[in-house]
Every structure is written in C-alpha cells, then in structure tokens.
Amino acid sequence: MLEQVRDIIVRPSTEEDVPAMIAIYTHHIQRGLGEVDFEPLDPKDIKSRRKNMLKHRLPHLAAERDGVIVGYAYAVLFRKRPAYRYAVKNSIYVHPDHLHAGIGRKLMAALIDACTEAGYRQMIAYIDAANGPSISLHEAFGFERAGLLKGVGYKYGRWTDSLLMQRALGPGQAEPPPNRRALRLWAE
Ligand SMILES: CC(C)(COP(=O)(O)OP(=O)(O)OC[C@H]1O[C@@H](n2cnc3c(N)ncnc32)[C@H](O)[C@@H]1OP(=O)(O)O)[C@@H](O)C(=O)NCCC(=O)NCCS
Image (tube, rainbow, N blue to C red; front, top):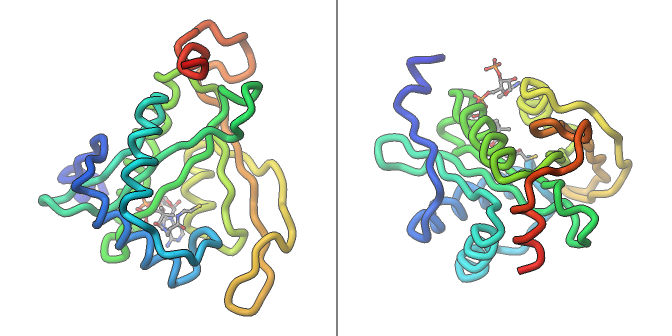
C-alpha cells in the first residue's frame, strides 16, 4: 500500500484541474455511488465555487499521479448560518481507475489537516447508506455514526438512506474556539 501511495501528490486544486474533476464526479454520479445530483456540472460554477471556498480558507484539494488528476476532495460550511461557522461538510471522489489504492485515505488526511489548521472544529459527512467503501474510509479516520436519514434520496427507482457521520477536528467541542480567523473570515 505504501508503495502505491508514494507517487501520489495531494495539493490545492487549480482551475486547470476542473475538467478532470468533473469527469470523475460524473462517472460516480452515473454509477449512483455518490450524492443524489443528476444535474450536469457547469465548469463555470465549479470554478467560482472553488474561488469562493478558497476565500473562506476552505480547502479544495486535488490528488495527482504522474500528472493525471486521480481524485479530489473539498469541504464546505455545514450550514450557512453564523452559529455553524466552525463545522464543515466533506466530499471526496477518486478516479474509477484508481480506486482502493490509498488515494482516498491520502485526500482525507490532507482535508482533515487543512480544516483543522483553518480553525474548524467538526467535520460532517452525509453518505449513501449503501456506500460501503465511503463508510469504511470515514470509520478509518475516526468518524462516528451520528444518525440515519431514511428515504431522503431517490435514485434508480428506489428510495435511499443517508448515513450521517461526524468527527471532531483538533480539540473539537472540548474548548471554545481560540482561533479568530474563521470568525473574521465569516464576517468578511
Ligand atoms: C470512497 C472513496 C473516496 C474511497 O477512496 P479510495 O481511494 O478508493 O480509498 P483508499 O484506497 O484510500 O482506502 C481507504 C479505506 O477506505 C475503505 N475502502 C476503500 N475502498 C473500499 C472498498 N472497495 N470496499 C471496502 N472498503 C473500502 C477501506 O477502509 C480502506 O482502507 P484499507 O485500504 O485499509 O482497506 C472512493 O471509493 C470513491 O471515490 N467512491 C465514489 C465516490 C464516493 O462515494 N465518494 C464519497 C461520497 S460520501
């Protein structure tokens, strides 16, 4: 596993990565593994979303192997209301030809580190309850099952459940937020 992971670079994504990220996302949506979202993605929307996230110190990361984008990950605010400004929601997608090769693990570690460093205190994931690989990946990083939302999705002719998972970042709720950066950024 270590040998496989060594040649993978995780770095902040750039605008040039957007087409490759859309291709990865579209593959997974068509296979029905990821989120319930059948709207084709518009590169312009992704580009402006990326810029907006970077402004708020929300990481948008790409994994690269031999110059090819093999996965990406990002975090958005859990909710837009100010009270929730220390909680983020994650997303991770790995290229279909590179699954179970340690890329998701590398992206998740970098995403957790970047969000912790930025001052966020909780990371939340909504996962299709049938998505075993994603649930295992999250469990491997200490995410705990926080709830099951029944029948909230509908795809391929059946209702789907969403598993809500959560893990603390840094001291989590054990301490008040000492870091004012996230607060200040919210006010900007
Ligand atoms: C979920 C996903 C991101 C995992 O990425 P990955 O690069 O394949 O995962 P890794 O190789 O880093 O594996 C890390 C851990 O995840 C779990 N995992 C990954 N693939 C798995 C599989 N096919 N079956 C069971 N567990 C799996 C294991 O716990 C694994 O640890 P291990 O190697 O010690 O067994 C990837 O499968 C993916 O992109 N899926 C489609 C999109 C998606 O569902 N994204 C998440 C939306 S919530």
